[in-house]
Image 1 (tube, rainbow, N blue to C red):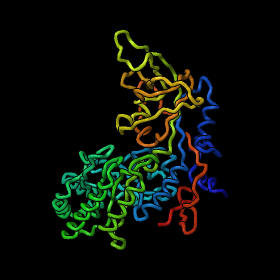
Image 2 (cartoon, rainbow, N blue to C red):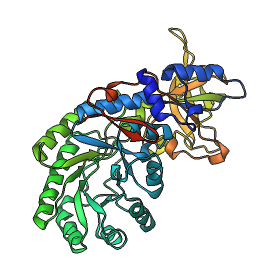
Image 3 (cartoon, rainbow, N blue to C red):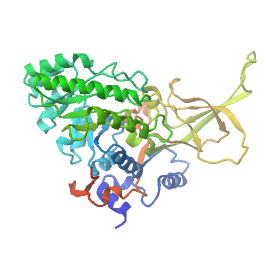
Image 4 (tube, rainbow, N blue to C red):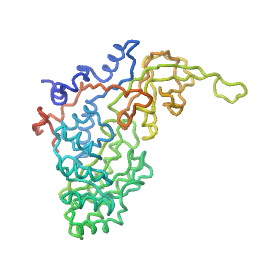
Length: 438
């Protein structure tokens, strides 16, 4: 059986089957969907390249061999993505009862989940307890009190703050205790008879400074030492997320991984007995999704009288069928910059015009791209947006009645490495599950 067919057999079920475009690469699937569209069927859609997700996983295993990935569900909770990652043995970082329920429904074992939200609703703690999800984070005495009264046998992980001021999305403004407060919180946990098994941190989503990992791992070591002095057997280090998911990112994933590996070797060397995990999100999915939108309207705006400083005589406003209230919420919440790519290519030297791209809702805020250069296009043409996998559809709404784009999957060209020699095969959701050997 070909590698692609093996993966399809593991991932596809009766629910996902209609969404799969078989025997096509992602680019071929995009072209097939557009070519099949009619004037009455021009809704935006997404192509998810699960082979790209698998390639990212293999690169992670090769580059960070000591760090077990626990995928951040909040980044993209697409069923196809979650099933694919579960099929290769990835763990999951969940932040709510709903996310835990979703992951457990895939057949994932409770010990492969970390409830990585330092501020949890009591009913959600109770749900985690009843489902056997024991690992969970905390960063305050109040959280310790809640867990002690609801789930006293939980395995607690102390989240410490980091300097994430240069990250795309800083998180320490909301979560994480100063490392200097670690001893006090550990004493409190000891007094409540809670088991603290480790330390976690997050250098911010979209980390732009490798040194943030170095400092955070060093701080975690100091908290481990404080825990040992108090009497805890701390055995887990969670280095969070922040890893880039696009090939043009700076710093590159490999650069961050080098820094992480060096810091781990210094502070948590091989053989130290500490399990190391991480919470990558955008790393796995950012480059795997391509969004196709159609132009539903256009308007030429001419330079107004008395405005001689205008850059051009006219500009063109394009209206598309997805926007800030849909997939492009990433512009507001994830500080994303998106690039519209005309599906129909023009020849060399094609004339371009100052342009802007707008979403379909009645809100003036719904601007996708404020200023760009585009050739003149007609209503019904397609604009393509690449690298749309992270914090996009998961945060979209149906404001004004506009539906979220339909998601399709392709799996052609999947790597065979996770099915090579030395791989363990276990029963998973009625199919074979392959796990990369560590």
